[in-house]
Length: 233
Image 1 (tube, one colour):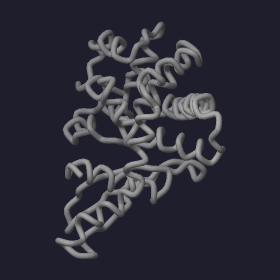
Image 2 (tube, one colour):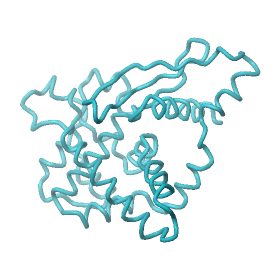
Image 3 (cartoon, helix red, strand yellow):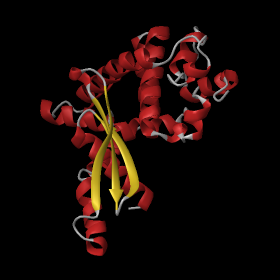
Image 4 (cartoon, one colour):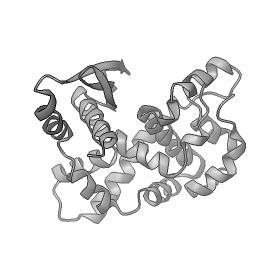
């Protein structure tokens, strides 16, 4: 079975936190697909992801409030949204070596699940939720801020790609025309008050990127951003 927990010690070194409750940590790393093959496993990470999303939002809001005392509420809100964006969370997840330690079904692994943005962002939020439950808010805050490093650098990078759909259009249009790019919703999940959309972007019918977001627009931007990254743009 993919995703053996044997490497948990190494992962705890990477994230900079050692769990008192190892079962809680394993649950945070367990994708729902894993239970299809191992129904006796100790649960999956969706509830922890829900909690971790809220904890992450508070950590980022508090840090931004302290770091940028002159900024207005609207600017702080945009900064927080940029830092909690799906592609940023997936980037952080890769930096702390999370993909190698996820517990996925064999089918999900074969489908490149370890590189899928939605799986990585959910797993990172689940780990945040697990750290919060295991060690409290200070431990979760310390871990998250350590993973992010220089927040200003992240925000500067975000500012440079604020219009990924426009940039993708600029690159594709001269060669392939106005109608070469098409966005399509491939998945929609969650309750009405907390929807999650997955969108693929096709260029001349070929999928070039996939993104996830709380709105179709956000998911389309994430898909365009991934396409640009794969193009080296």
